[in-house]
Length: 168
Image 1 (spheres, one colour):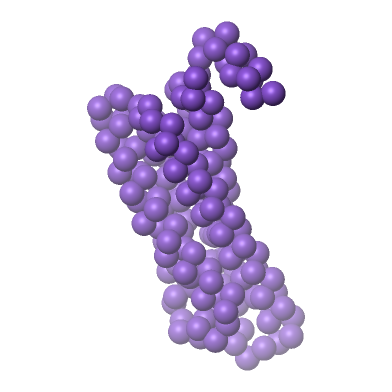
Image 2: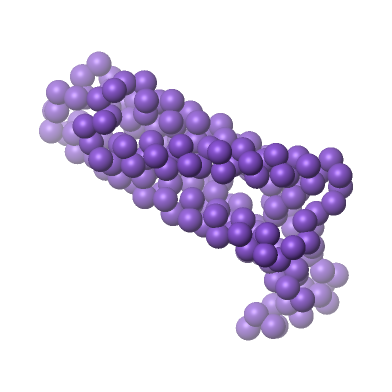
């Protein structure tokens, strides 16, 4: 199946420049969005110190603290590639970026789902932690984490799409 896919791509003129794959300006735009959403999610979560009482809130904070530098470093690499007008042609490098994007995507999805469900449970119970609009801050943080997850997933899928053209 993979061989047929690669042969189809070669016959279609090769697609080394898949928009959104590592080293392109579209990838930089995706990384910039990831930086904005992950850092904003981290800021909204850390506006109050009560989030330390719940493991799921700490989990999202930790995941977003990993996603932010990951996205910054890859945005810098994308900037370097765009300025030199040279795409990285190393399959190992693209495989590492693909693996990192996939792992970060699943971690951020898990954190966002956990915070969204815990916040909904706390607000429906009328927990005292939801006073002073803390639950709305946590919901905004979960929403931003979902948006970051969407961009991470898009980056992973674009890199997955361009990987076969580098292997052959």
